[in-house]
Length: 365
Image (tube, rainbow, N blue to C red; front, side):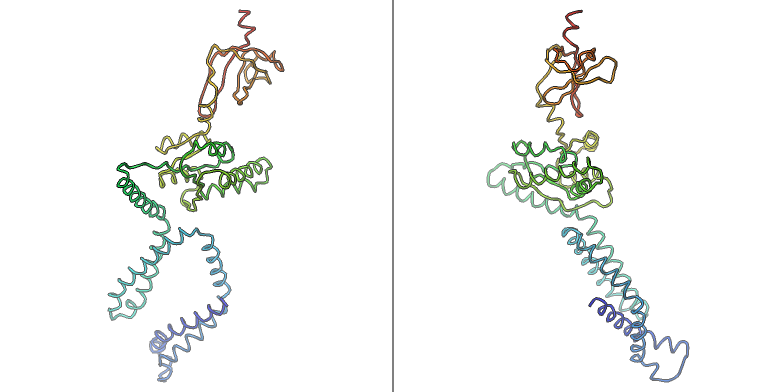
């Protein structure tokens, strides 16, 4: 069916071109003086035949190209397609208004060819502007809606009530899994936003040939499924993308700026970049460290030394919550449970480390 439509398009185009130009070409090159040859209707028939024969050579390429465009359009999110089409319509309307004045010019090339060029050019620019700046249009519309809602609330209650900011999840915090438990406790307020490009990265990890990466990706997808179906939180999938930005972390920061949201992450580097760019960020590791039992220098603990440390004569032990304890002079106690004395505590966004010495050595001193 599509091939027949392409053939018909070529026939109509050839007939139109032949009607307009073939008589002039024949007259210009003085091929013949026969009047019927110089007739526009003869030119129309000849042009239709020529373009019909050309279509047999080009039809397969054109049909393949049209199917490629069809598949690409199907994959485009509805919002992107809507704003792109809206920009295209505006561009075509502007082109039509410009072409009205150009068509009054009595030069055939200017009045017939230039309008076609202007229509294609402005239609293309309109589509590109609508498609590439869709995020700003959406943000503008959402801002107006939020302002109306706030004004209505202020009129009803006399006080404007601020809404919690949307929480944007990155890949690391989804794979970590603790975000689901935090959502279940209702400590995280507002809408949970899961960008489509983060889902794509998770799917890519889940399809990896590496077994470890594959398991991490599948765990992340299971966590998202739990958050969306089992927990009492509002989840939104953000369909948009920032095609001019290749890195997922940079896309998250851009999205947070566009929707005025908060990035939720476990990534130490992303945390720092967000701080530098003034984007609000919640680090799950900071939260975990904040709720851990406070351990102060001078306290005594019972720990089991598990393995060697990096430095000479060091031993490594762990608390029940996974906090690492570096036991100086603890290498000789590997495999034993001993009492240690805390000497210092180092706490960062990447985690917490505790340094200690065996209490037996302190007593000996």
